[in-house]
Image (cartoon, rainbow, N blue to C red; front, side, top):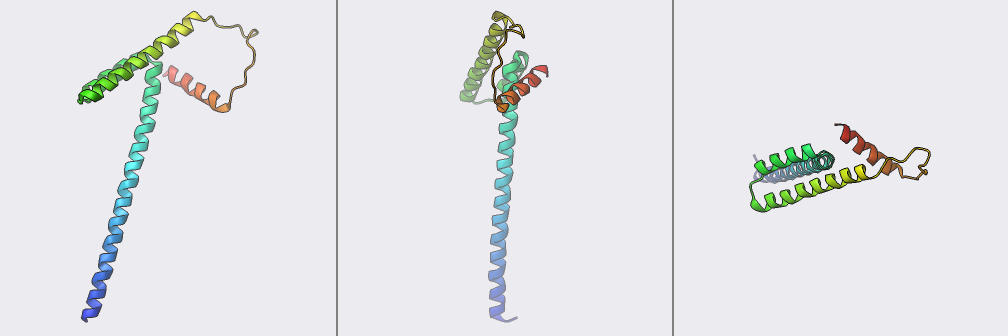
Length: 128
């Protein structure tokens, strides 16, 4: 084989290996971003449910405190759990202290479709 042909093939091989490495790096990056997005979505759903259900919040707190070992992370999680309990207590107090208005007395209010969808999601979560 000619030396020039061999050196050309070696350069081509190097370019292809570089392209494959770049493609592999891009695939790893996309997988990492998908995993991060999944964690954010699942975490948001779990936190929303923890705010609505004190039993779930307590169970979640127990699981997290067993799984998380760094002292600073444990302190942070304990503060979050206390805020969930506080939010739940405020919601319960507000429900108990305000009587349900009669349907005739209620004035119609305008709500955005986004607000309505959010309320529906929370109602669905409360039923779980």
